Image (tube, rainbow, N blue to C red):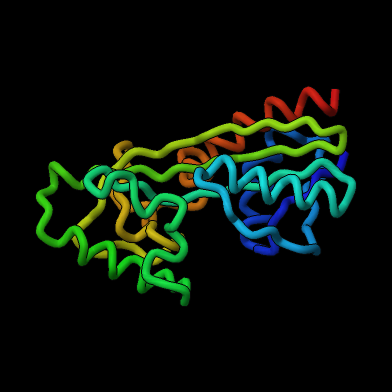
Length: 195
Protein backbone atom coordinates (compact mmCIF):
# COMPACT_ATOMS: atom_id res chain seq x y z
CA UNK A 1 0.00 0.00 0.00
CA UNK A 2 1.27 3.45 -0.92
CA UNK A 3 0.53 6.62 1.01
CA UNK A 4 1.66 10.03 -0.18
CA UNK A 5 3.19 12.50 2.26
CA UNK A 6 1.76 15.95 1.48
CA UNK A 7 5.05 17.78 1.79
CA UNK A 8 7.91 18.79 -0.49
CA UNK A 9 10.32 18.47 2.46
CA UNK A 10 12.70 15.51 1.95
CA UNK A 11 13.76 15.62 5.63
CA UNK A 12 10.14 15.21 6.72
CA UNK A 13 9.77 12.18 4.42
CA UNK A 14 12.82 10.57 6.05
CA UNK A 15 11.61 11.37 9.57
CA UNK A 16 8.07 10.09 9.07
CA UNK A 17 9.31 6.99 7.26
CA UNK A 18 11.42 6.18 10.34
CA UNK A 19 8.51 6.86 12.72
CA UNK A 20 5.90 4.90 10.75
CA UNK A 21 7.94 1.90 9.53
CA UNK A 22 7.79 -0.09 12.82
CA UNK A 23 4.01 0.38 12.95
CA UNK A 24 3.25 0.00 9.22
CA UNK A 25 5.77 -2.43 7.69
CA UNK A 26 3.62 -3.00 4.59
CA UNK A 27 3.10 0.68 3.81
CA UNK A 28 5.33 2.67 1.45
CA UNK A 29 5.46 6.40 2.14
CA UNK A 30 6.00 8.27 -1.13
CA UNK A 31 6.98 11.88 -1.81
CA UNK A 32 4.55 14.42 -3.22
CA UNK A 33 5.07 16.53 -6.28
CA UNK A 34 2.07 18.76 -6.68
CA UNK A 35 0.42 22.01 -5.64
CA UNK A 36 0.42 23.04 -2.00
CA UNK A 37 -2.74 24.71 -0.74
CA UNK A 38 -2.77 27.98 1.17
CA UNK A 39 -2.80 27.26 4.89
CA UNK A 40 -5.95 29.21 5.65
CA UNK A 41 -7.06 27.17 8.65
CA UNK A 42 -7.18 28.59 12.15
CA UNK A 43 -5.94 25.42 13.86
CA UNK A 44 -3.17 22.90 13.32
CA UNK A 45 -5.80 20.26 12.49
CA UNK A 46 -7.49 22.42 9.83
CA UNK A 47 -4.18 23.19 8.11
CA UNK A 48 -3.04 19.55 8.20
CA UNK A 49 -6.33 18.45 6.62
CA UNK A 50 -6.05 21.11 3.89
CA UNK A 51 -2.65 19.70 2.90
CA UNK A 52 -3.71 16.04 3.08
CA UNK A 53 -6.87 16.66 1.03
CA UNK A 54 -4.93 18.51 -1.68
CA UNK A 55 -2.38 15.70 -2.03
CA UNK A 56 -5.09 13.04 -2.04
CA UNK A 57 -7.06 14.84 -4.74
CA UNK A 58 -3.94 15.44 -6.86
CA UNK A 59 -2.57 11.88 -6.67
CA UNK A 60 -5.64 9.72 -6.08
CA UNK A 61 -3.74 8.04 -3.22
CA UNK A 62 -4.37 8.12 0.51
CA UNK A 63 -2.41 11.09 1.85
CA UNK A 64 -1.00 12.16 5.18
CA UNK A 65 0.12 15.61 6.27
CA UNK A 66 0.99 17.46 9.40
CA UNK A 67 0.92 20.96 10.75
CA UNK A 68 2.90 21.73 13.84
CA UNK A 69 4.39 24.50 15.92
CA UNK A 70 5.23 25.70 19.38
CA UNK A 71 2.67 27.13 21.78
CA UNK A 72 3.93 29.25 24.67
CA UNK A 73 1.63 29.45 27.69
CA UNK A 74 2.32 33.06 28.68
CA UNK A 75 1.79 34.17 25.05
CA UNK A 76 -1.69 32.68 25.02
CA UNK A 77 -0.58 29.76 22.86
CA UNK A 78 1.38 31.81 20.34
CA UNK A 79 3.25 31.47 18.04
CA UNK A 80 0.98 28.47 17.42
CA UNK A 81 0.00 28.08 13.76
CA UNK A 82 2.25 31.06 12.97
CA UNK A 83 5.40 29.35 14.33
CA UNK A 84 7.15 29.03 10.95
CA UNK A 85 6.72 32.72 10.14
CA UNK A 86 6.69 34.26 13.62
CA UNK A 87 9.39 36.79 12.74
CA UNK A 88 7.88 37.73 9.37
CA UNK A 89 7.70 36.54 5.78
CA UNK A 90 11.38 35.54 5.55
CA UNK A 91 10.52 32.32 7.46
CA UNK A 92 13.94 32.11 9.09
CA UNK A 93 14.32 29.63 11.96
CA UNK A 94 17.06 31.78 13.50
CA UNK A 95 14.99 34.96 13.42
CA UNK A 96 11.94 33.15 14.81
CA UNK A 97 14.01 31.87 17.75
CA UNK A 98 15.60 35.29 18.33
CA UNK A 99 12.21 36.98 18.46
CA UNK A 100 10.73 34.44 20.87
CA UNK A 101 13.76 34.67 23.16
CA UNK A 102 13.46 38.47 23.17
CA UNK A 103 9.72 38.31 23.92
CA UNK A 104 10.38 36.07 26.92
CA UNK A 105 13.60 37.75 28.09
CA UNK A 106 12.05 39.16 31.31
CA UNK A 107 9.88 36.13 32.08
CA UNK A 108 10.77 33.95 35.08
CA UNK A 109 11.37 30.22 34.55
CA UNK A 110 8.10 29.28 36.26
CA UNK A 111 6.18 31.08 33.49
CA UNK A 112 8.14 29.74 30.51
CA UNK A 113 5.98 26.66 29.97
CA UNK A 114 5.33 25.64 26.37
CA UNK A 115 4.46 22.69 24.21
CA UNK A 116 5.11 21.54 20.72
CA UNK A 117 1.85 20.52 19.00
CA UNK A 118 1.46 18.37 15.90
CA UNK A 119 -1.74 17.58 14.04
CA UNK A 120 -1.33 14.52 11.80
CA UNK A 121 -4.04 14.21 9.16
CA UNK A 122 -5.12 11.41 6.85
CA UNK A 123 -7.29 11.97 3.74
CA UNK A 124 -8.64 9.03 1.73
CA UNK A 125 -9.85 8.91 -1.89
CA UNK A 126 -13.31 7.86 -0.67
CA UNK A 127 -13.59 11.05 1.39
CA UNK A 128 -12.66 9.52 4.73
CA UNK A 129 -10.54 11.66 7.04
CA UNK A 130 -8.89 11.43 10.42
CA UNK A 131 -6.72 13.73 12.54
CA UNK A 132 -4.62 12.86 15.57
CA UNK A 133 -2.94 15.39 17.85
CA UNK A 134 0.40 14.90 19.58
CA UNK A 135 1.89 17.24 22.18
CA UNK A 136 5.29 17.51 23.85
CA UNK A 137 5.38 19.57 27.06
CA UNK A 138 8.40 21.51 28.23
CA UNK A 139 9.69 25.01 28.72
CA UNK A 140 11.52 27.68 26.77
CA UNK A 141 15.19 28.02 27.67
CA UNK A 142 16.91 31.39 28.04
CA UNK A 143 19.42 30.63 25.27
CA UNK A 144 20.08 28.07 22.56
CA UNK A 145 21.50 24.67 23.50
CA UNK A 146 22.55 22.01 21.00
CA UNK A 147 23.04 21.91 17.28
CA UNK A 148 20.64 19.14 16.25
CA UNK A 149 17.05 19.43 15.15
CA UNK A 150 15.57 22.51 13.57
CA UNK A 151 13.16 25.35 14.26
CA UNK A 152 12.63 25.96 17.96
CA UNK A 153 14.40 22.75 19.09
CA UNK A 154 17.48 24.56 20.52
CA UNK A 155 15.37 26.59 22.97
CA UNK A 156 12.84 23.92 23.98
CA UNK A 157 13.62 21.64 26.93
CA UNK A 158 11.09 18.81 27.12
CA UNK A 159 9.77 17.95 30.58
CA UNK A 160 10.94 14.34 30.18
CA UNK A 161 14.60 15.23 29.51
CA UNK A 162 17.44 17.25 31.01
CA UNK A 163 18.54 18.69 27.66
CA UNK A 164 17.07 20.70 24.81
CA UNK A 165 15.30 18.98 21.93
CA UNK A 166 18.31 19.94 19.80
CA UNK A 167 20.56 17.84 22.06
CA UNK A 168 18.52 14.65 21.77
CA UNK A 169 19.49 11.84 19.42
CA UNK A 170 17.31 11.23 16.38
CA UNK A 171 16.10 7.99 17.98
CA UNK A 172 15.06 9.84 21.13
CA UNK A 173 13.17 12.47 19.13
CA UNK A 174 11.48 9.75 17.06
CA UNK A 175 10.26 8.22 20.31
CA UNK A 176 9.13 11.27 22.30
CA UNK A 177 8.34 14.17 19.98
CA UNK A 178 4.93 15.65 19.28
CA UNK A 179 5.22 14.46 15.67
CA UNK A 180 6.06 10.92 16.75
CA UNK A 181 3.11 10.86 19.13
CA UNK A 182 0.63 12.17 16.56
CA UNK A 183 1.76 9.88 13.74
CA UNK A 184 2.03 6.81 15.98
CA UNK A 185 -1.64 7.34 16.84
CA UNK A 186 -2.51 7.90 13.18
CA UNK A 187 -0.65 4.70 12.26
CA UNK A 188 -3.29 2.72 14.14
CA UNK A 189 -5.93 4.09 11.76
CA UNK A 190 -3.78 3.47 8.68
CA UNK A 191 -3.07 -0.13 9.81
CA UNK A 192 -6.78 -0.86 9.68
CA UNK A 193 -6.86 0.23 6.02
CA UNK A 194 -4.12 -2.17 5.00
CA UNK A 195 -5.62 -5.20 6.81
